[in-house]
Image (cartoon, rainbow, N blue to C red; front, side, top):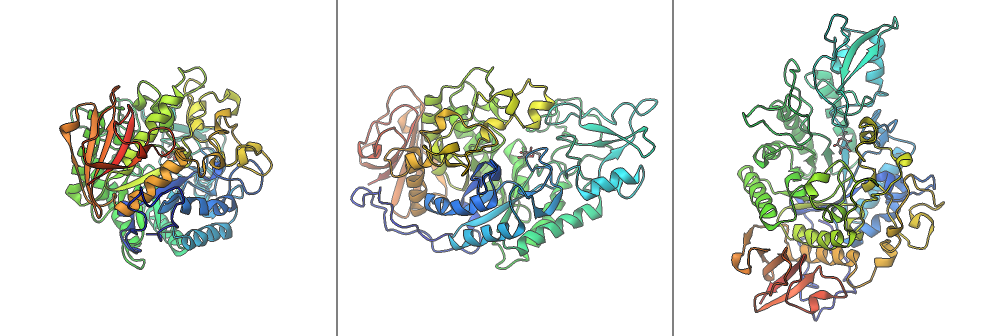
Length: 583
Ligand code: GLC
């Protein structure tokens, strides 16, 4: 755990009794159980060299901002060598840095600076597929059918008289078929290869020993460079069912078993757990044992199946996408919390909360729509109904404060601490997400949540790059939300997050368990948490009418607009979360 940050000048010790209490002393192991981990999307965080694309030196220069924000760790989306067909989730060399982002020396410098600041570093690992420019895939194309080179991927002959039909009916997550046919050395149409995502992301065959060995070696490569953990991309996809059978059902990322209990043949196969057991052994071999972690990006439902990824000898965490996709309703959120906490308790794992990331519409935008769950992964474009930005931000602040009061770990996505919305009116000609292209422009895709961060309101590209270049245009609304406009401003979203993170650390809200208080009515979620300072009551009001806090509580934090709203207690307005100390 990083050291306690300097006392926040916006906190008044007379009103904020927790100032100076101090948090848990540095914990070398198990730090991830209650950590707040900040996702950096490198191409959009901070551009050091002015080419309009964020880079590692840009991130390193901004690390003090993250330490000051009060997070425990940083997760970096991929920065490896890549042709960028899927923004770096198509890796051509797992052991090097793409020149767009810098060099290996820049990565080392980033890790060293983060550690100096008390921040841990988690890197992304993309094991399901490589880039089509990976040396293995090039060799596979050159070597031809039946070769050992092709055996590392999922090449198959096509169906039909001349093999002109794909080997099965699977669809790509990004739209279109999941198979592409190659031309063989003689120029004739040949075999097909599987890609659950883009054509340029061929799936590896995880039954192959060389594939398994290679990733053990990649893990060691980054662990030897000092990283503290890995976020594992589509961790539920690596192993496919024997024989690659057809799957008539829709191929959705979050598709659990059918009502008859049948599992999709491309997701969540039993043998995938063997892979993570071998990885866990590698992580645990680094000193001190238990200090390195893995978090699964596994779109697995229901929570009981997801919990299988965090059994004691597998991963440490798995993102809770059920919580992320829940409607803005007390019953839905409460059910998502209870079911996941209960499922994880069976295997002894904490829960891992998240509301935004680089694949989903940001929660400040999602919660300004009628059906937040509908926008996960598909984006919102200029031809779609536009969200209510004010309502979205208001609810997002309440949702974040609710999340940060729950026991377990929490992930933040860059810019959510500024209350950033998605760019929902990006012009078609700047879009880059393969989802947009593979759906032939019928689905906006994920570019809207990947727009570069505004640091300085009055600078070109809002301070994202020294030249004012920006790989995606930023919406005008980003000016007022720039970090410099919010720093030190009472009631700003940035100061709200800083305060919440500081209180969370000092009250140790990430530890322990929760109980619900049903006495405040059906429109309210009210949590009671035991803390070193006594009981804390967390109230989120989903109703239209304000709700009175019980007598004898002192508000510590409120997401209501305006300066220091916690100083004007009760009642709790609509769509607001309050944390209060029970005295
Ligand atoms: C994960 C990543 C996403 C990527 C996909 C394929 O879902 O988060 O950005 O496109 O995997 O690698």
